[in-house]
Structure formats: structure tokens, C-alpha cells
Length: 336
Image 1 (tube, rainbow, N blue to C red):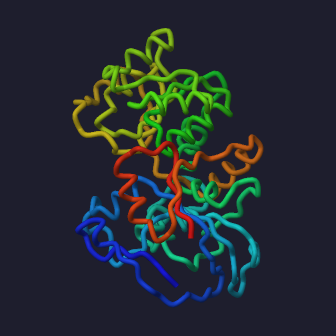
Image 2: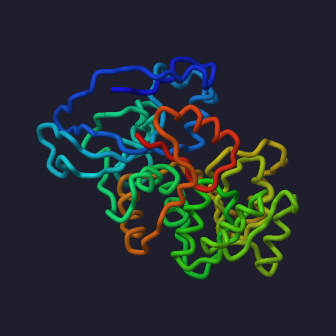
Image 3: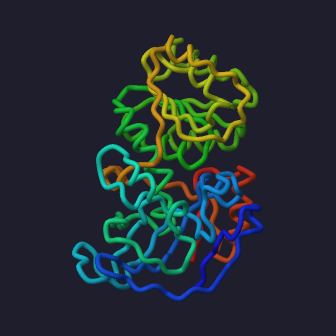
């Protein structure tokens, strides 16, 4: 079988396609034929050497995939050949709050990921998925969708009528927009592209802000909320946007700290968080329990993930280069 391996720390040039033996499932394990995968910014950081030598090599990258169970090992009770499943980002985080053992079990990080034609995972490391979703749409769920779900529903306890600020139009923010809309929240989304903002409006965004035209976009957010600020922020920029996010927040509001996309140029001060009585919650994906709750809600509302671009497995490195350009809206997927 074919697999993609990260074989060093120099960046994308250290990604090589290799041939491996097809694995066999052991007790409590399943063999999956991969159908689709999706890219996350975390994957780009990993293969570009952003995590340094904390990443082991050789490593099969990518965490998010959809596949078909083709063989089950002894003792497997909940799955059978022919079942369609999503890979779970954390293989050992089943429920409850995060733990060291759970967070140390990420695919495409501590463990080999889904950039391979076949893979063996534990029975509890995959989950069945709604039939109405395509393989690419399923592959979009394990990281980006679950991160947005945990941020808003699990940690944020989002309520109808509350307001949500979403930064940018990548995977997490677009899922956040869809989940917030389904929950009856008012949504504000930012981008540097009017074309992307138009697409966000089509998905149900109530308000849009071009942050290139409005570099002090927190003022726009306050104007849109009658100077009160928003209840929730999905903060995917990191320290480079955190000051503006804080200035957009309602007193006592909730900021989900998710990403590191923006450069550190915002001079954030902790005193601002204290003054606003802000709740800052770091988010690193979520548990199997949360994934299953999310897919039930998606099935109920028939929420369709936004897949912007699709590449073949042989073009995976090209897809990663495309992600570097940040031109996508929603998700980039890989078909096997």
C-alpha cells in the first residue's frame, strides 16, 4: 500500500511517498480502507517543521479521515466490514475533560495519521457517521468541526439569541458559523476577502467585516452589537488578534483560544481580560463523546460541511502548498 511519510524536519521537501505492507488488525482493532482525508492548519505546521523535534520521524501525517472497515479483529463488537467510519483525532479521549493520556494520542502527531491507503485503529478510535454526508464531508469532521463544536457547545454553553464572532473563513470558523446558526445565535464573521464574506452570508452569517478595510475591527463588532460586544469569540488568530477579540467581547463573555494564524503584533495585555471578566478557554479538539453528540446534531439539522477544494492522494503535497496560500474557504480534502 502507498503512504506519505515525513522523514525529516526541513519542511515539505521531507515528505516522501513510500510503499508499506498492508497491516492486519489485532484484538479489538479494525482495518480501514481510507476513502478521503482533510487538511488542517495543524497538519501544515507539523510537516513544515513548526513543532520541531517534538514530532517523531518517520511520521505518517494528517489526522482527519473517512474510510470503510474491511476487516475486524477478534473481540470487536460494534463494527463490521462495510461500515463507514471517521477517524477520531484523539484515540484515547473517550469522554469527560482532557487528560494527558488522551491528549498524547493524536493521529498525525504522536501516532501515525491517515495519509495512507489502509490503516489499523482501535475499535473505539473510529466512529460511525451519518449516511447523508459524503466521504469528503465526513473527513472534514474530526478536527475542525469538533473543535468548533466543543468551543461553542461544550465549553461555551451557547444559548439561542447569543452572539458569536468568527475570525476568518477556514474550517473551524465555517463550522462555527454553521453550528451557531443552527443554535439560533447571531453571527459576525471576518475576512480580508469580500468574495469570501459573500459566501459566508450565503451560509447564514448575519454580519460581515472586512478586516483589511477595517484594521480596528473590534469597533465594527461593538457597533453591530449596540456597543455591548459579543458573547462568544472563536479566536483562531492567536496573540496576533487576541487584543481585538478582547475589545469585541461582552463583559463576562467567552473566548475560545484555538489557533495561531496571526503574527504576534497586537500587544495583548492580561489586564484587559481581568477588566472584562473574560472567560478564556483553550480548545484542543474534543472527545469521542462530543464527536458523537456533534454528528447527531448535524444529522438532525442536516448541516453540510463546506468542502472548497479536492485533490487526489498523489497530489497531497500540492494540497498542503495550497493551504499555505490561505485561499480556501472551509475545507481542503484528499481523495484516495
